[in-house]
Image (cartoon, rainbow, N blue to C red; front, side, top):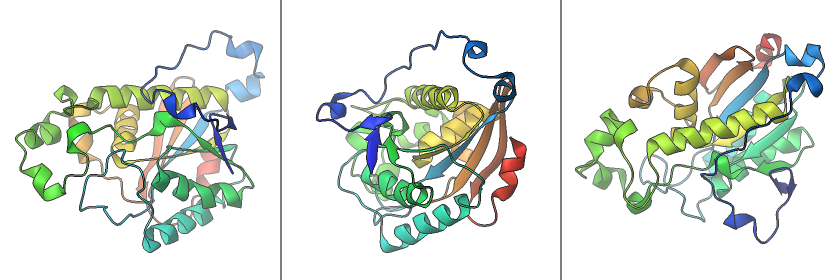
Length: 247
């Protein structure tokens, strides 16, 4: 089952802007949450989608119709089995692209939850780079800027890295506020996850390409009232149950 932002998907949902800025929540948290919850961090598990036929070969961007490979489906099931070991998961969100939703589905199914489609988790809009092979993209004059100075780059016909990071941070802040003191899964894409992790670490955006995010990897960030704490990055194997004790 798929829902969009906590409601059933309707025919107009596709028109919602992926780069929207979340409105500020003006209700004081003390009016909504008991102190025991206010003092408890929200644990966000950032999961990259599993392997696809184009991973490491082509830049699919936001192109529709790209599904997980057989190995990608196996990776998604393995990620679901690891997350299932946690005591509780409040919600599972995913980018609207097929590869993200297909990765989120076994995670949600194991918890008897619906996958909530959240367009704020979308891949960076790479505009004219969509569909280019990595080899061809690397020959473009813009490639050194993408690798060394991404904060100053906008994809022709697409999004800037700075806009993507702002969108991702805003989306995570919204999820944290919605699920205060709980565990949330957010299935997204490599660059948005790298940008979110960089922000949580206090790493400049120009250095975010140094962070590796493998297919179906899990990165965990605990969002406290005083700021985030990065617990693990690019985890592809092993027990995750210890994360529950960090909340």
